[in-house]
Amino acid sequence: MNPRISLITLGVGDLPTSRAFYERLGFVSMRGSTADIVFLDTASGLVLALFPRKKLAEDAHVDANSDGTGPSFPGFTLAHNVGSPEAVDAVLAEAVAAGATLQKPGQNVFWGGYSGYFADPDGFLWEVAYNPLMDLT
View 1 (tube, rainbow, N blue to C red):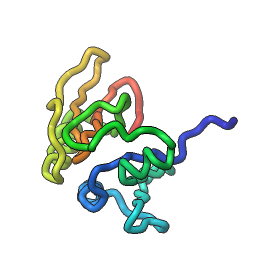
View 2 (cartoon, one colour):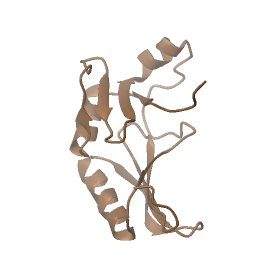
View 3 (cartoon, rainbow, N blue to C red):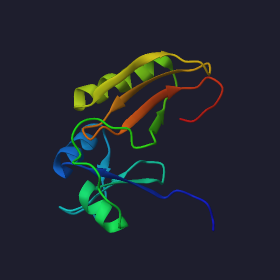
View 4 (tube, helix red, strand yellow):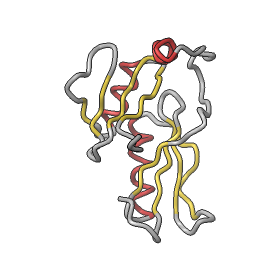
C-alpha cells in the first residue's frame, strides 16, 4: 500500500445545507458532484466529499446508529492551519458567519500555538490553528 489520503467523506444529515455551508466557506464544488454527493476542492490535492449519513453507512455496511441530529464527536477532527493567531480568529468568525457553531474560541494552547474549534452543521469538528513551530499553511 502506498499510504496517502486522497479523499475524506463526511456523512451529513442534510446534503443541500452542508453543501451551501462549505461553499460559503470558499470550497468549490468539483466535477462529478450530483444531487446525491458533493465533491469539494480543497486546493491541496485532497478532496472533501459530502454524502448523506445514512447512505454512507449503508455503503460501508455499518449501522448508521444516529439520526444525525445534534453535535457529536465522530472520533476525529479536521484541521485548517493558518499563518497567525489573528488569522485563526478571522477564520473562526468566517465559519460562524457561514453557519458554524463556535465550539472553542481561539486561544493559546498547551503545545505553544493558538487554536480554536468550530462545528459544521452536522457537528463535524474543525480545528483552526496557528503553529509557530511548523509551516502547515
